[in-house]
Length: 388
Image (cartoon, rainbow, N blue to C red; front, side):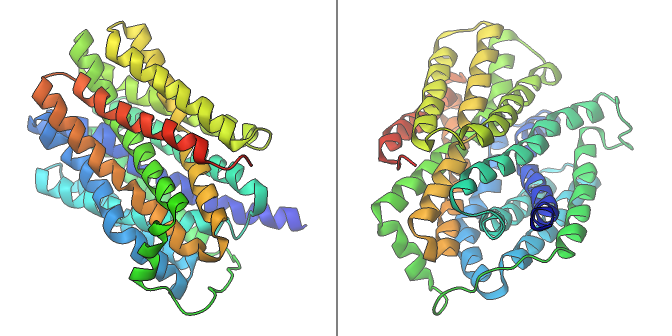
């Protein structure tokens, strides 16, 4: 009975992980908006950068908010904000409207990622947390994987789009957000009370003075930068080097998420049997090999293989870093979670530099160079991780 009750609690939490994946629609959406509004790379890359900018602003305050209202209520708040972000694009895809929509999507996701991961730790704890977080990332990756397909089907009228075209993606995900709010709201989850008085901003940021926490924070920045950067740039590489149209090239985004989804699914089992440090090293090696391939080759098959390697390699990096960070200071779980999710600000930094360097070099090789810097840092971080 206890195990049955555990699964009942996990269902709405995992559905919230699916809603967490809505943020990755910004990659394919920014490419469609770029085509609709005839934007440059730098202008189009503002969209993913803007989404992840809000992680810098809201992550630490969300960690403090959780200490006051609890993790579950914070997740519910994040889902409500996400609902409104998905509602706006139904009315058009003008530049300002999409900026507001992606801003709300980023704010909602910052609230969600900060609160949902530690909420899961109220259901699953100990050495099973990393594999459970990875399974949550697998569920999240399903939403990420479906987004390009739903947008493409809407754009090509394969599914009824009600005049929305590719934007039919937004109401589809909006319905899922409503279902998640209802199910999670009806689920009882016991949360431990924070120890002592609530932390101040200064006390939260002071945790970055701990060397291991700082290394993990930068590692999260690089992980998300690689994730968002590949999501956004993969179609552009195919369009530039092989002359593909956007609809055909958007398969690259789906391919990335296929391998990321597979990596999360397999990682949940691998991490229960293999040292997280060893698996982390294997994952980074796969991404490093992919960066070499994307720098040197123009073959469609090799580009696809490289995209797949990045997807699989990057799929478990977040779970490993996040779990090691919060387990290093379990008494400060909420604050550490806020700091780690603030690292998702890397999704703002990387696309901006990738857009500027690509425009400067008049080639997507500039974007690959920026991604390679992130992979090199993860290789540097690997020896610092704990063996368990």
